[in-house]
Length: 193
Length: 193
DNA sequence: CATTCCGATTGACCTAGGTCAATCGGAATA
DNA sequence: TATTCCGATTGACCTAGGTCAATCGGAATG
Image (tube, rainbow over the protein chains, first blue to last red):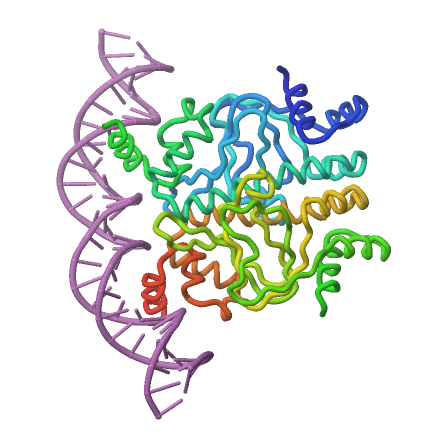
């Protein structure tokens, strides 16, 4: 499936729009490809667009004082990525967004999104639903971190990300669930027994 | 300020609606009061409404296997509370929502909200913006937990919740930032020096 | 005034998970 | 084939924060 077909399919999961509106929507999107390890966004830059992944996979993460990486999101095809904090509050971002495979995207800038809302108000609903779902999942993640052990978080991770877990390095999974690679390795060893 | 005035003021921060629309909106809300320690929601129940706090304060939290409480949100007046996971995905909730002071609320059920969207589509925008902001903050919370020490999280908590920190118990603050009351007490002692 | 409650504090001890450095191993590059 | 990477693993040791039980203290209740 090509990128445009994929994003239209995604949209149609939540709202119904006419062919004309589909064309109008697509015309606001800017395609862009990134190769593995290329950055979509860097810490310090203001994030002013939503990026839809049509192929490949990206991660968003921050570096702490010690320079250690903490992955916030892993976004495979059919997902949007944004540094929400930067986008919503118009502040310099604190996240890096980086392709972990060669990746194709469609970019919707803040201006274009505003234009989209004006032209096709139904997209307010699309983004409302999208964000409500993402928020619900994010709240789960908070409660998981607060109440589960590393091993339990890994269990959940495996269930939720079964389809992409295999294409991630152990380092990435460890960072996502919030442990060091060394400890993650020991965890796996313990489970194998 | 009374509850209706407060919620209208909140709405008008994000969208502009006519007096007629305001009346229509208010007519969909159900007022309800709770006394301290009363539950708005219990684990296992499906959460099918948004609740706007007009006075007082509530907390949402989950109990882990050991029965320890982990606070997810603290919602003072002028905030909405929901168990998003339950509301959005229509699953039994895993959160308790409990008044920590005598509290007055306005309830918007899922059905009424749907009706609201149908009658005044601009409310899609209101909830989109609201959720985008809440999501951004939630993502920050995830990165904070992953990358900051307990003391640093407490620092941030004090800044963000300066206005209500004084009315919370140490237990509640400790639970929110993700440490035990015992450790929290030691942290305070260390800071005082 | 006495009592109960409940949050806060503290002491003694414990553990999940971190740190750092060394080693292994497989894939990609020269 | 030899070399370089780079992720995974492992060993030895460390620490932030947890546990559990005792105590303190102030506010509310009888």
